[in-house]
View 1 (cartoon, one colour):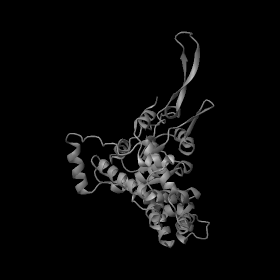
View 2 (cartoon, rainbow, N blue to C red):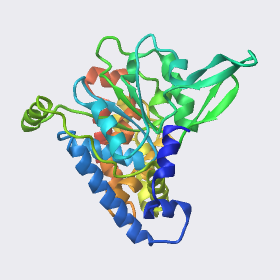
View 3 (cartoon, rainbow, N blue to C red):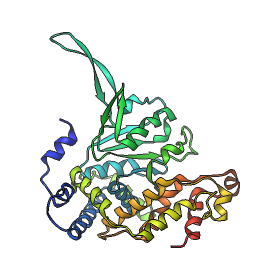
View 4 (cartoon, rainbow, N blue to C red):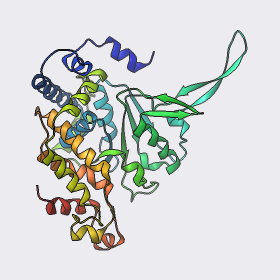
Length: 352
């Protein structure tokens, strides 16, 4: 029996879990209020370990509830790894961490067939030995320090939630999410992630340096006895219920329209694209960007105790959803215009 199966079977039913099963219980308003209460508890538990980074934690929870993968970008030493492991504890999820290195092989992530011998009959057969990817939350640490061949091992798992090895397909546990950390591409020993893989991450979250007071608190905490680990505020079953509840939240046509217009405005050949995009962008966001904007907006609304997503939710999430999907041109490089700056100009050009 796997770790995640054990956790799910021993957890008593909750209103959120019953909602996912379709059993009679509280109405949608009560379930949304319960989701907001759990959100506050998770923030409190994570805050006992992580100093500051409130926006980063919020975006991480949005990705989890929206059932989307997330990549964190920032310099080493900013607690990206600690944040993900702390979230897994607070959410009661099984957790695996893979340190990506230049010599890492795809089978080191997905698993491999191993020749086993029966001690009684001496018969030999191959058995699949599952890799660390078989967990609820996989931390792909420093994803861009491994070559593209190994990076590509995650593609099927991120999209299909399954792994194929030696002609056989194995389902991954649900929920299954990849949270990756990435060092700035300009640093030595890094490989730029291909566009096909970046597009599978719902959100890219920039992790910046702490403020002066936050850094003082970090030094105080890390030079004393470590704090107690966060108490679990959810179970895997309840997170699945939250994901289902987020999908069921209604979204107005005007919200969908705004998300689609934002995504299309990043494409240089589209009539909606402003002049800056035509000049500075080689490749814009695809249809998956609009899907991510709407789904993430639903998750954000749910975590804030609201019954529907708004255009303001879409706008708040647009930088994290669109920036890594915009490929700038040589002209942009010459002018010093980054993908983040392009997205800011798109948001200013597309009316709310």
